[in-house]
Length: 149
Length: 162
Picture 1 (cartoon, chains in turn blue, green):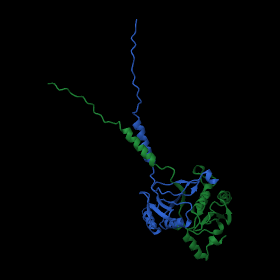
Picture 2: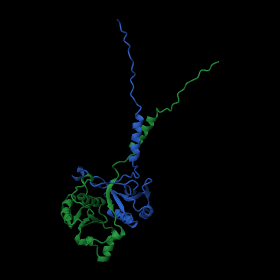
Picture 3: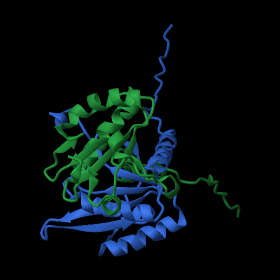
Picture 4: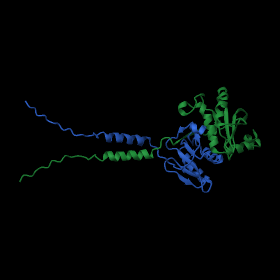
């Protein structure tokens, strides 16, 4: 008896139904964890081994060097909008006081190059103290074994 | 005449959804900042708890213009700080530590000392050594405080000390 062998055709398909689920899961993860950099000024901050996370919404006081003029300049952000240049220290004090008068518990981050003279940082600390700020964070990079040697 | 009824299935096209989703993922991956925003935490003294620190009872650091520093009047390196302070803080955990930086001293040198002083009390997960139960009592006098001391004592005690 001759059997007729019926060939079954199975279409080769990669199931992609769950791809959108995975993609949206990743989107939610990034949306929750993303912290937009409010200041992108290139500053070679000092290095430290102890490093605490900067809380979201912290205000930034940025001191950076104008290489062509060989002098230091300032930027400020209240932690909500992108940092913008501040013409002088007296304007910086006004900015600090404005933010601190709304919320004294808001942490202030000082982002300054390691080679900057201490008097510039001292001036800022003094202003923050006068404004009644409770917590400051000195922004640092990770110190590695190479830095020790 | 009998009209033929067209049977069209109602459907929302979701073919491009994955494209949009991946586009968003790439956007968030590019803009995300994870480890760049970390630093050394420093609590500023509030008015009511502000009290002068007796210099004789304190461990005293003086940062000089070239980035070197004196530890209780002796030149020292960053690596020597921990071994020097631990026995003192074990005996007296509240012993004040003063970091005085000259106005033209590099800010990074002060941060380096502050980092070393925090190390013994911080846990290993935080990058520390976990040797002391309590964060040391560190004070960093500002220029106006130095002027106030000068007014009280007739000279800058941080400079005349050693």
